Structure formats: C-alpha cells, structure tokens
Image (cartoon, rainbow, N blue to C red):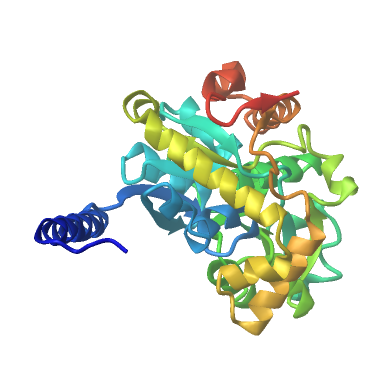
Length: 348
C-alpha cells in the first residue's frame, strides 16, 4: 500500500486539477469553435434525384467533417445554379445539361461529382385529356410545365421536353412552356388546377399522381420506348457543382463536400428504402409510400461510387448538343472542360 505523505497528496491534487482543467478546456473548445458553414442549393425537397443532398445532415455526414451544411431548396436546377454563380451558395446540385447551358451563357460552373447514375423524368398528362392526348404530337396547342429555368440557364427538364416534342414533329412555338418547380406542391398544383395540360415531372411526384388517378404517363426515361427517342439518353443528371474560385481558394471545402456526398450515396446503397424515408423523417402516409416505392422501382437512380463515367459524360455532351441545335456556342462546348475529377475520380 502506498504511503500517503504531504508531498504525495500535493502531487495527486495537482494532477487531478490538471486533468480537470484539460477536460474543461477541451469541452469549452468544442463548444466555442463554430462549425464551418457550407451552403449548397438543390431542387426539392423530397425529389428523388436530389435525396442524397438532403440526407447529408440527416445522417450526420456534415458533422463528421466539422461542417454545418445549409441547404437552399429551389424549384429547378437552373435556380440552384443561379445561387451558385451569384455566390449565395458554395455548391449546387443540378442536371449537368443545365450547367452546360449556364456555361454557354458565361456562367462559371465546374462539375465535381456525379450524384445520379441515370436520369429520371416522367412526361405526365392530366387524366381529363385521356383519349385526346395519345402521343406527344397531340400536345400541340397545350400548356407544358417544366422545371424552372432562368435567363442564363435552361433546365435539363426543359431540354428533355423540347427534345421529345421535336422527336414527334412538334415545333416549340406550338406549345406554351410554363415553370413547374421541382416539388410535390408545385407539380401537383399545376396538374390538379389544370394550369398545365402536361408536366415534365419528377419522381415520386409523378407516380403519386398516377396512383391517385390524376395523370397518365406519355413518356418515361425508365421506358426503352422513350429512351430510344433521346440521343444521349443516359446523360448525367444531378451533379455536384461549384465555381472555379472555390476550387482555387478553398480546395479543402471541395474535399469535405465531396466526402459528405459520397458518404450519403454509400448510406443509400446500404440501407432499405424504408430506412431512407425514416432518416428523412417523411411521415405523411401517401408521401412516404410513394417515396419508398420510387426508391424500390429505380435502383439505378444514384451513383454508387460517386465517380465520373466517361461513357456517361459522352452521352451528356451528345444530349446537350442535340437539345441546343442552332446555338454555335453550345455546339462548340466540350464537356471535359467543365469536369474536375480530382476529388471524385473517374472510371471507363
């Protein structure tokens, strides 16, 4: 047994005080040092193509990086890109054809990680028009909703709608294009109020309206009959993008955002649709059912490794060129000049 002397007692008290002080300092430091804020803008909420963005804070992937992720939901990828180039956001997630459209009009945008593996769009028509609209050509004279574009960037949804219309001999001046947003509220209201006759919509909103008998599908990128009409049909849709100055001045911020997104993609790949819905706190019965079913129906929606595919980039360039015929600047654009694989990596 150790003999307690005055010297030993003093030593033990000093050690205890030192340990207590160190612990208190560590706790104070962890509380006092604010988390780094990173702002990302993306369509949503609860649009299936963009779920990995909204899942990041839900699974704590941002906290793991010492980051507080602030998400700015918008009604279209072009609006997300506008937030990026006007410096309201550090990053945007948008369809890459929309990013190429922005670049053609002078916007500074660089793709750094693929979020989607396959595009997911549905051209849905109001059920009241069943029997009158049997094919895309029958949309002549009708009102068609697309994801919200901006002055300097045409959304991927609008590019897709225009390609499909042209494929069936419908000139663009024969229809009226209106903004439809990229949320359940905006897309369903256009259909339910009859403001639009058709909407180039997103999942799970389209399937939910179909289940309720409010719409029927005229085209679907999950259907080979549709994709055969679309050059570059397997184009890169939702993509993580930033500006060149962010890459130059804050490369560690880009690295953190890339790691967060990859962690979110991996989480989705290793969890059930029900667990995804739980983590996103989707409690509305109809919304939850539609989301779970959509996740089950479209397992290829998300990239599993977060790496750029050379084949997909080639398809994206083809899709963009076909949707931008007559625009010399767009035709001259090469996608490789807009992609930085430093953080995400690439594959054949």
